[in-house]
Amino acid sequence: MKWLLAAWVAVLIALHQDVWFWTDKTLVFGWLPIGLAYHAGYAVAAALTMALLVKATWPKELDEERHP
Amino acid sequence: MIPALIVFAYLAIVLGIGIFAFRKSSGSGEDFFVANRALGQWVFLLSLFGTNMTAFAILGSSGMSYQRGIGVFGLMASSSAIIIPLTLLFIGTRLWGLGKRFGHMTQVQYFRDRWQNSSLGTAIFALTALMLVPYIIIGVMGGGEVMETLSAYQVTSAEGVVTTTSWVSYEAGSALVAAVVMSYVFFGGMRGTAWVNTFQVVLFLGFGAIAVILISAKLGGFTAVMERLSGDPKLAVLLSRERISQPEFFSYLFIPLSAVMFPHMAIMCLTAERVTHFRATVVLYPLCIAAIWLPCVYLGVVAAGLFPGLDAGQANDVIPRLLTQYTEVWVAGLLGAGIMACVMASDSQIMALTTMFTQDIFTHYGGTKRFGDRVQVWTGRAFVIAIAVASWLIAVALHKQEGIFELAIRFAFSGFAALAPVMLAALYWKRSTAAGAWAAVVWVAVAMVAVWWLHEASADLVKALKPGQAVPIFPALGDLLLRGKGGVTVYGFLPVMPMVLGSAVLMVVVSLLTRPPPQATLDRYFPAKDAA
Image (tube, rainbow over all chains, first blue to last red; front, side, top):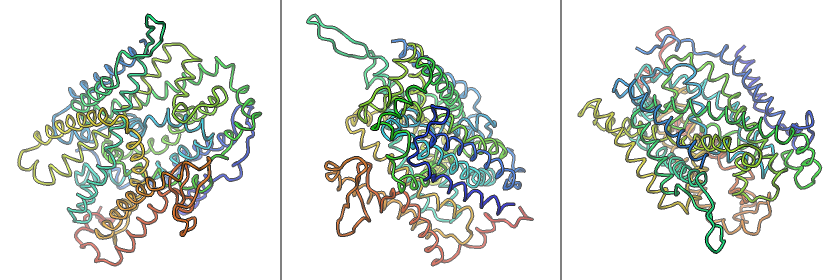
């Protein structure tokens, strides 16, 4: 599971370089440039990925640490 | 005058928050410097996010989008949306745990103990303090400028000549901002700073939403503006990334590595009451970034369709322009408070520098042992006054040289990012050594000086350049070092990339060439899992 997630994070970082939209000026819904829509979606994908990472890689040993 | 009054009210509120935090304080060093390591989940999330917000997020991002288009969001915001939460998850939580276990309040305390090397800590303290100071000065300068602009009014002389003057001068405005920040940091310490940051983020988000809704309503939606942009061959490029090169876009992925190396971010990581507070922070951080940056970048591009032909300096004022022309006067007041909130992000930097000074210098060299915990706190408070007064004096004396500090901040981003391999090695690589860390730190310092020198030495080349064009600084070296209008690049990549990679390589190679750390240190920092 952890290796799968690590691979997905690597893919997500690569997907940040969306060369395919570099010169695309299409307006989604008539008002949102497609390059901006893609990166807004990217931020949402990053949040979902973080949720998975938190679930899979959480440092459980630190949960015991409390303020004295 | 109404905007200025709203800003005064805002300043009074943040001062009140600082005094309220003071009343909650126990007076101990742990309480003043790291809020007793007891911040709640939502204050932790919002203050950590607010700590990393500066005036650039609202004014600079919209100004840059006005000139370079929608790609600015990917360049700075979505790159941060993936990298910063990763660093919080894999570095922030570990720093938090070590802080709880060993009582560290700064990164330098950790590095000193991890590699048993006092002078390495002092070198990292000096480098990070030097890189932090320009942020504080720019914050005070920005405060003075905002106050002067918001209190401006026009006077007509007997001859009919109209001149613009201000109720609050730059000097008085910057003094007021420095005094307010100094007061709530002085009284409230880390708790006051965190609460003010939380308030500021709520204000940012509220302000952004209100601004977009009101401007959209006045324009009758954004479709017509976007279609006009799309139909204009000169402006249509702003709807794509044609004004950003691919190497530059790629290089920007390295910049967010700086976040967790910023002392104010790292120290903030130590303030959470429980490590579980990081969970929501890590997951929601990308969405917070998008919520702030998306409207700013979008409005910057919209402004290009509404007010074409502004120069770079004027472009930074497009959000104020949009609000002035498309909303009511009370919104301009909210804007002033919002901008002030951004500018006052220097509070966490002053707090961080104070904590570093008291812990890494005063306490490390015996001050707390000799004079006690209360004197340590009052030394910190005295330092807050000293740094605020010094920043104001510099902000007034060097107001015309503001560009120097802006340039210093650009290099500081790269410098902090290039220190990230040192932190990663300390946390995850047992074999890393003090010599490896020394090599990386020296590399970062030398690289920053070298890039600055190259930037200044090649300044004359810029005059003949067209936008997007770059020329070799030393023709004999080919495209190795290029100079464009944006600065020096290495084969077209920003200097941050070779700086980070060089730091990582030196950390690894020099560590492998030197003696491993003693087993006792490794046992302390890498206990066996069953013993942990």
